[in-house]
Length: 71
Ligand SMILES: [Zn+2]
Image 1 (cartoon, rainbow, N blue to C red):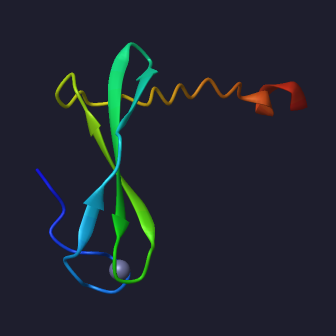
Image 2 (cartoon, rainbow, N blue to C red):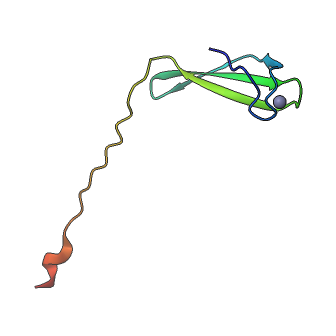
Image 3 (cartoon, rainbow, N blue to C red):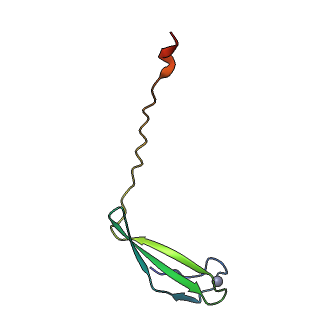
């Protein structure tokens, strides 16, 4: 997958720079850098290599009901 156009100016003159690899939570992220030849903006595209893994944000709601202290 390649970006088709610059998100800043909409032109399609993109130059692919060296990608960066990151390990985040035992997942490999590959960050592709693109430079627009028209407006010289640089933007990134991030791909996760281990497929898509739903990040379950565990919202533990251990709210102690302190209302009982009001006796
Ligand atoms: Zn541009």
